Length: 359
Image (cartoon, rainbow, N blue to C red):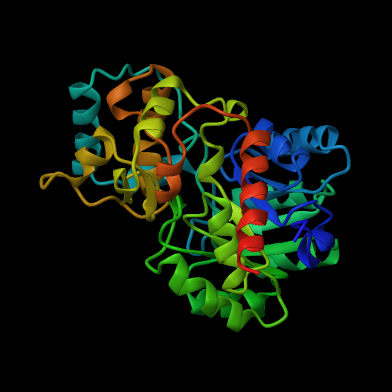
């Protein structure tokens, strides 16, 4: 086998069937220009920032494919009203957060964090989706949730609709909603992840998907993982953790050091950041929330508003013990600063060599 190009890469117009997720616009561009499909995670951005970011992607990807990822979970408040959310947060939770602030001397600078600049609500989600619909973006990925009001206009505009799923029932719902492609994301994955391992999940999702292409996600770090994914029936892969130590990601030095030192077992699943399960590097932040005296994290978006300002202040003032990052169990394969192009080149070369060795 001399090329990784297949029907999926031909369908989306990329050189390789490798989809790369990142919150960094520079990383997203670099993934696309290196032959993959860069997917920009924009859920925590305002509609104006999304418009600006998609313009940046359009300008810098030279006509190559890219996409945007939004998370639209069901059951969110109707309105973007922070006062309403704060009024419902228990005093005990507020006191616990202030205790962390005091213990680690985190300055209260009066500024919000990424999670607390606005409330994750249907009102905000609709505004974000409206901007995406007017942008001309080719790929829309939905990390959580598949509302009809987002899917129908995307289909009308000819977008490729990608749904991330962690269980067979999620795949069935996504297909019924109109997904064009499924990402079977296993337990190994960073950020929001479910309880089923990648090897247990991918073949089942492939069987359910029928003619729809499936991407394997969760623990994909090497060409051997990509070859294994294809052997399970996936047509491509979805990768996030591999880019965290790339220069284009602009990861803070304190976090970069933790990522470089981490083994797979140094990642933990916690609800402390968003109220939903989120795999991340273990830090004093996760340890504080795992303490027997810690309150149970609130549901989304209440946890976002409870801790969002503090998380922003932790990062801005570089409070190292509490700084952390989402990361999957594949973090053990990455221990030095590199570039997106170098990572992509290594993935492709090893995939081809692995597949050749099996013939």
